[in-house]
Image (cartoon, rainbow, N blue to C red; front, top):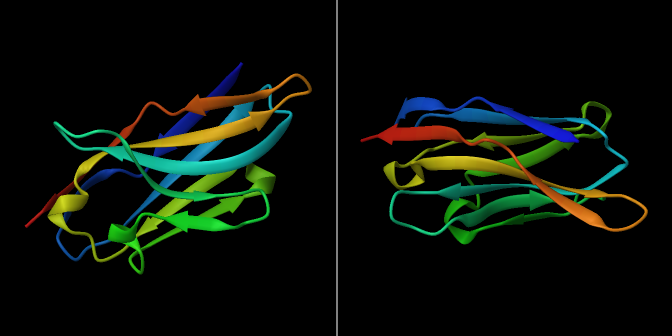
Length: 119
């Protein structure tokens, strides 16, 4: 089993910053891509950013220049640094981790952390 523990969400004013963390533990063989998704009320879950094992990053257009994703492989942890937050960034943020085992790749999800940006 693999556990993902997220932290760092909260309430912040527009223009403020937050840092989300997601630590993986348990039966980890090899971590591939790590990422952050978000889901706002009434909307579909969307990819915010992800980072591969070779540190190649991808961002949704709406957060480019404001958010930075990073990972610490020694700690099996992925971070999302969010700056210049806007009310439209309000959502539940979920981390997603792809873990390779000899037989296949498994995807795991965190429990979600609420980010609320007030105007």
